[in-house]
Length: 190
Image (tube, helix red, strand yellow):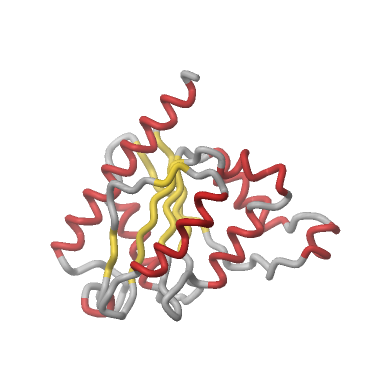
């Protein structure tokens, strides 16, 4: 069983990025699953807080990511870049430094995103590249999912309604799942 974790970079209750992850979870190939985790409740990073101990919400998310076969970040685009709340969560997940390798080292990772704007989340996804490289993730660059004009492809209940996008998302999760499965198999043989 290939187990993936999906994290939305939005805290909004009716988030397009969370809805995109829910749709992805429904389209997962046989023998795999996508568990959606939240960053809600993760405090703003503060070294003084870290010195007193890693918050429980951070530890739980770190442990889930560490044991997963792969990670999908569904990132909004705010002011032509990554969302601060998701960057904050990733900063916490990399604390202390000694945990970076356990949580992110060689972890297959895919980026996708949805936005009301016309250009998808291309700038947000590009802004993530140096961060993910620094953390040592194994970024999957074969597929890119950039959803623009999100209000027109999701209904009021957050369900995808555009068949072209559903087909793109299905290919995306199938190909990334195979990449994660192959990466984990190859790393266990080393």
